[in-house]
Amino acid sequence: MKILKEENGQTLILVALSMPVLIGFLAFAIDMGSLYRAKRNLQITADAAATAAALDYLYRGSVPSATSAAQAAATANGVTNGSGGGVVTVNSPPVNGPNAGTGGFFEVIVSAPSAVTFISVITHSRTMTVAGRAVAGAPSASDACIYIANTSASDVFHIQGSSRITATGCGIYVNSNNPNAVTITGNSSTISADQFNIYGGFSGHQTAPTAMTPNSAPLSDPMGNITGPTPPGGCSNTNSSTTLSGSYTAPGGLVCFTKAVTLTSGTTLGAGLYVFENGVTIPAGATVRVNGGTLDLYGVGSSAGTLNQSSNSILNITAPTSGPYNGIAILQPLTNTTPLQVQFGSSNQTLDGVIYAPGAKVSLQDNGGGVTASGVFADSMFIKSSNLTIPSYSAQHPATTPLKHVSLVE
Image 1 (cartoon, rainbow, N blue to C red):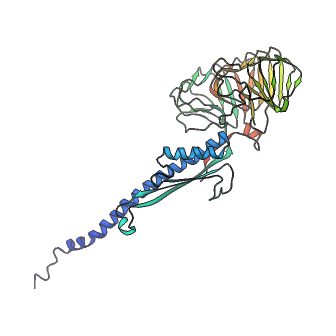
Image 2: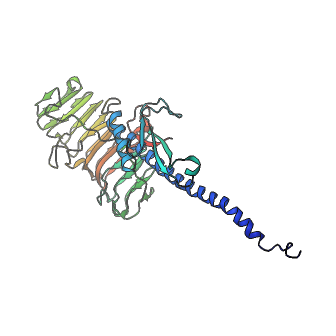
Image 3: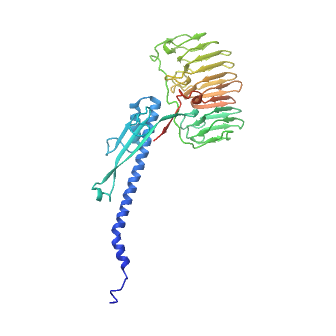
């Protein structure tokens, strides 16, 4: 009878009976962890694809091109539509969510099978489909008004001497990942902006009152890669004049000057795109105005024609507020890598519009004059003891600004 009352070993029996349940829960947790990881990776893929589509659309304005960019981004992140069970669906406008039907937005849905081991006992399937969804677009105006596009070089933004940059309501962004992307020579410059962000780093003195922030998040070019017509054949109207004076308006809104042109004092250009194939000169003492137009400094290479503005001259431009060159006062396309000097000595520029030269170095030198422009977007920039004032174009033209910031919205 004493043997029958013995309780030793009961815990072992309970543990043995519980082991299948415990192992089942462990197996379920392992599979769920695997599925969660696959879900997270697919969300990353969807985010990348939607962002790529929105960026491509911002640059090209083509839904098919943006869709191709989304598919390429998905492939780069491990999911190819129609391969290995992967499905990448790109909708523009989105068909789901709060942005459904909104043009310029891209919805990307990515799904793929993920292997499971223990759950297959219940589902009778070795895989389960997981998915990710993202929506991206350019819903708001960018606050970048100085954007340095070079991605890797050192010294792409150099500030020297007693320079003064005043960027009201907007910020400075340097896209180079180089640890010495920005160089500050001396400590007498004044930088006043909403922010001064650098993808890489800087050398020299810290700036004030706005301090530089190195190792910032990447930022897309707010203007995209805008190009003008490519002569010959890109212009329906050509002009072989070497000198312009008085009032002149581009025939049909577009004209290409086939020779180097001098704009004499009092020259006023009307609305339109003025393509200078061999450069344009504003001589000393001249005052030139452009009302609703864009100066396009077409060229190829590092010795192409550009803008030559002499000391003691004035250039005033009001950029167009619609069309393909909306907001652009001076355009030097990516193909023209000739340095663009927008201020020298006592010359002055007042531009209600941006300077867009993504392939060139833009420079300002001497404090006898200065530049007021709505933005400067360049490959690199050098400012030596000059004054640069940038009132935010987006704040001045909120309804028509072309400066957009691509972001994930869902």
